[in-house]
Each structure stands twice: as C-alpha cells, then as structure tokens.
Length: 488
Ligand SMILES: *Cc1c(COP(=O)(O)O)cnc(C)c1O
Image (cartoon, protein in one colour):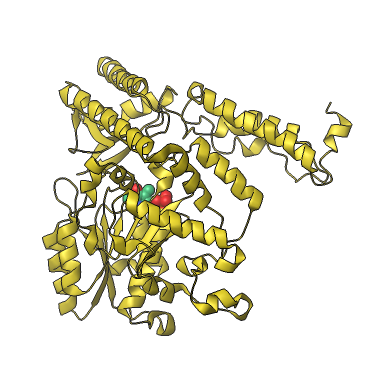
C-alpha cells in the first residue's frame, strides 16, 4: 500500500525544496542509466500495445508522488525503450547526447523562455546567432552563411524542417515574392537525387509543389547524383515551359552516406538560376576535422546548408543547424507581422526575430546546449571523437572486405559502412534479425541496386573499439550458424 501522505504530496505544485530533492533523484536516475546503458537489450522487445496496456485507463484525479512516477519509469517505460544511447547502437544514425547537452537542457527548461522574438528574450536570440556563426567557422562553411553579411543561421527542430524552409525560401525567390500572394503556378519544379532523404518529397507535398514536380535524378555506382542527368532534365523542363527553382544536393545520403558532386551541381544551379540547398544531416559534423572537410568542397556555390548537431555532434535532440546566404529570401517566405507582435526592436530592423526563420512561432532556448557542448568539449575533443568514430568504421570496413563471408556495397570514407553477405539477400536479412534478437547490438538495413544491405553506423557517443569488435564477432557468428543451419 502506498503511503497516504506521500500519495498526496503532489496535489499542490511541488514546492522548491521538494523540487530540489526530486531533481537530485532524477539526475541520479539519468547518471545510473547512462552508466548501465550497455546492460540493456539495445532493441526494445515489447510487442505493440504492451506498454499502453499497463497504463491506467483514465488520468489520475489527485496528484501522485514523484517516487511513484519514477518507479513506473523503471517498470513500465524502460522495457519499451530502444537504447539510442547504448554504445552497441549501430542502427539508422546516431542520436547523441552528452552531459553538457543534458545539463543545458535542464537549464533551458528551468528558464523556459519563448524565444519567438528578440524582445521576448534577447539572450535566446543572440546566443543562437552567435552559435550558428561559431558552427560556420567550425565546419569550414563560407562566410556568407554567417550573420555578418546578408546571411545567417537558425536552429530548426529537424532536418526535415530545414529542408522544407529551404524549399519555401527558394519558391519565394523564384516567384519574386508572389508564391505567398497568388499561390503556386503548378509549374515550379524541384530536383534531388534518387537517394535523397524522404523529407524532400514531403517538403514538396507540404509546399504545394506536388510529387509530380519533384525530379528524382539518377545516381552513379556510388549512389551520388549524376550532374549531366540533372542538367539534361532541367533543360527539358525549361523547354516544356516549366520553372526549375530548387535543387537539393546531399552530403551524406541517409541510405549509404553518398556525397553528391556539389561543385558540378553548383555550376548547373548557377547556369539556370536555381536555388541550391545542401542536406548534410549526419555527415556535416565530420567537417569539424580539417582532414574530412573535403566533403564540403563546392558549398561556396550553395544558397543554403543544413546539418544536424543532434545526430553526430553530441548535442541532445533536437538541434538542426540551418544556414542561408540570403536571409531576406527566407524571411520573405515566412514572415507576417500581426499587431500583437509589433515592438520597437522589431520595427527598428536591428534584431533577428527567429519566428520568421521557421514554421512555428514559439521556440525553445536550444542554443544553450550547443554553447555548453562546444565549450565543455572544445573543438579538439570534438575532432578527436569524430576521428575515433571514423577510424573505427574504417577498421570495420577492412574486416568486411577481408572476410570470406561479407562484401562491401560502397566504398565509404566516413562512419557508415554498407555491406552484405556474399550469399545474397535472404541470409543477409536473417543475420540482421539474429544479431538484433541477441539484444547485444542493433543494426538496420537499406536497399542498394535492389539488394538487401546492412548499414553499420558508427557514431554513438559511448562506442569504443570493443563494441565494434563485438558487433563484428556477432555478425560472423550469426553468419556461421545460418550457413550450418539454414532457415533457423
Ligand atoms: C536524418 C536525415 C534527415 C532528417 O533529419 P531529421 O532531423 O530527423 O528530420 C534528412 N536528411 C538526411 C540526409 C538525413 O540523414
């Protein structure tokens, strides 16, 4: 039986001392979790509905104690968690956190400001502008993306939002400000690689461009966009009386981390006066290291660029960095000023009002976590961690190419290795299921040239060599067992 007085402790809002006690319990919980994260099965094993079936059908009428809620975290919620913070997580892409990122989020929640306008919390806006300028410097982007000239950066909720905003800015520019006035002509055409992230297609759906007006350009044998096909397609569309307005090139596709030839695509964009947006969601972080900055070759000719510090840069979700060279194009696409938001700072034009740089009005103080992460790690430590991940991935790549069981699907220079079993799709898929069922690791797949391909993504904050080595042993073991006992 729960203690009655304790059960009723939460009826009034927690007083500050109680909050302090509970906050200590919460942080202890998080520290213990991160210390033990390796001991959980990486992929949650619950079946659909299992978590909900344990929750009360109706919300509580009277408040409950913090302890009883925390207890349910352990008993009800934890079995339904897939452990993205596990060092044995090699699926999809990393979703990294770090102590400074977590602490900054606590402070951001404590302040809980609404940074929609400069005036609603000047520090929220100014720190964000400053962090975005720091990032430009850190990953070696051209100066035009800083706030010093006509460009600037903003934190978006996700890469998908950034891709949509880039498309909206491009649309507004191509229609010289008329797309929000008269709607779209139905003649605007967007271009991206056949391997681009699904968010580009979604952006075309949302913006009223339509899927039929998105051209998925063929890729080469390394899954990078073929520029000559792009050029030809644009010419054909112009001949049809259509308006090419947006190209999205990828630095690191989701499927295989392919890098589109940005320089050549940039020349085409310039030739036809089309907005060039670069989606570098995960790979962008690698450019913190000078030796990997080659991935950004050609970005001088782009109009916008995005990457996700919430993937590989140790900054808790959500934090997408989005840069534009001409902020007026973005703001024209997204700004309306209702009477209730009018204020002196805005009217003076001397400040950024970030609500005009993205879709929602309200915004959290997300720059704090970038500030904490960059300051506490320092550039050298960030570089060292990224180098380590890439070195581990390259070592894994060698194991694959030297093995008699597996073969590489692409020649990857960074932290994602795509490979398959030499005997085909069926055994490759069975190996994936077997290692994932073991609970000791988690890996996901893609399809390349219509073949079932495993993706080994190495970038988790806590992944060390022993975890990668263990994953390789598990893959070999599964392959051996399945070869001896097919179909089991
Ligand atoms: C992960 C990814 C995205 C989407 O990022 P979200 O922040 O999850 O919306 C977009 N593009 C690429 C290339 C990605 O890898």
